[in-house]
Amino acid sequence: METRHQVYFANRTALVAYATRIVGSRETAEDIVQEAFIRFAPANADNGSQGRSPAYLYRIVRNLCLDLLKRRKIEAREEQGEPPFWSMPIDMPTPEDIVMVSDEIRRISGVLDDLPVEVRVALEMHRFGGYTLEEIAAHLNISIATAHRHVRTAMMRVAATLAGDAS
Image (tube, helix red, strand yellow):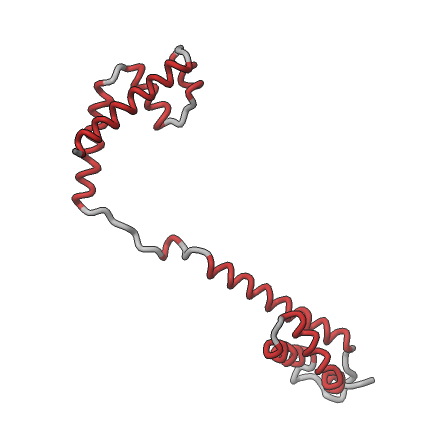
């Protein structure tokens, strides 16, 4: 039976060609075959002992190639993705932005307070509660068209108030 070194040297050229077909690069294939030899014939193994079969050496090369391809795919996926949320800087609003938003909320609250109760409830259910017009109509015992009219009326008043303040 051949020693591990003899098996490796007898099959080295074929192993490089095999690995090149899998990974697509002769230089990378050379590195993989070198790594396969290290795993096939470890330093602490007795050089005079009987070697393992060439099929085992080919399996090592194949597994190393597949590992490399998986690693490349993962790295490419990570490069394409966005960085983790915790590494992104937070856009902090300026004090002026906070005052403007607070003022808009105050004006919208005033508009909502001036609306009839049924119209306000329809708007709040639709915009803040995520209810459908059918659910709003059932809750208020009105038609779907009336529920739609209530929501539209309230939204028009809010939009008019915000547009009037902007100009």
